[in-house]
Image 1 (cartoon, rainbow, N blue to C red):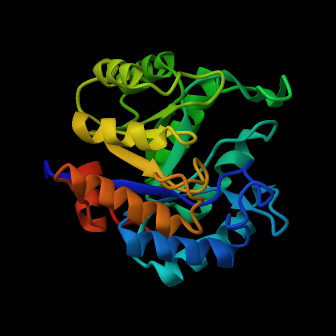
Image 2: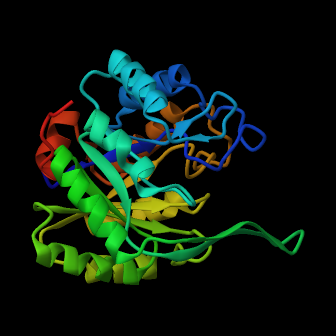
Image 3: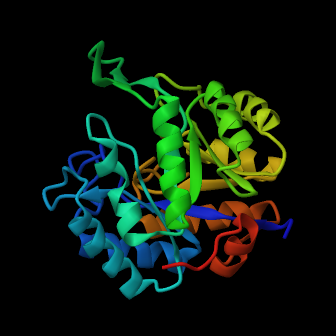
Amino acid sequence: MKNKVVITAALTGALANRNQCPYIPYTPEEIGLEAKLAVEAGASIVHIHARQDNGLPAYDVETYTRIHEEVRKHCPDVIINYSTGAIGIPNEERIHQIDALKPETAALNMGSMNYAIYSKEKKQFYHDFVFANPFKDIQFFMERMKAAGTRPEMECFDNGHINNSLPIIDMGIMEKPYIYSLVMGVLGGIAPTTQNLVHQVNTLPPDSVWQVIGIGRKQWALAAAALTLGGNFRVGLEDNFYLPEGEMAKSNGELVDAAVRLARMVGKEPASIEETRQILNIPRIS
């Protein structure tokens, strides 16, 4: 499947809000409809954070269950990927939606870091916190995902986070291929450049499959680089609001449609849901 590319849609995120982009979905019903638009446009995976109806982050199983039902109603076959990332939330609450719903995949942050947004205009930081993910927590989440039959998608915000995965691989907790997301452009993490992406890809262990997650408008340049390097990529309103031409997207479907057009420009085709299951060794479990 050398000419196939896996396109993931990150539908909503946890920090972005409607003051920044009025099209971000909050409710389970809205997230389900956005999943439908993304899948119809060519996404085979949807990455989801839960939100309260007012847009604040939600971590309870009940909200995740409502989201799960809405997504499955509109997209019965799509591969679901839930977030386990959080700050100041007990580990049991970060993982209980995986225990309860057993999604095919789940995101797992592979290291600790400073995490912030900086305004050059106002010369000040926003969302300034330490994102703590020590090895004992990484191992805890890995083992719980394995028990649920959920494939871990290892999110690496810097090159050292890739190295953090090596002891986990040595423990034999994960199955091949090892699924990596190279997250670029978060302040506190690696800068979003093609040179850095090439270096990270060269650092990955054998038997790896990877995607790039570009934060902000540089997402499209990184996606183009990923296509030439044989990788996959993620788009969606969690990461970037804007289409390649600079216009704000009105849905996740518009962003996925642009991703498909970009892939086809270099001779690639979006992998179908079934092809993605084969590429990533993801069984149908929910």
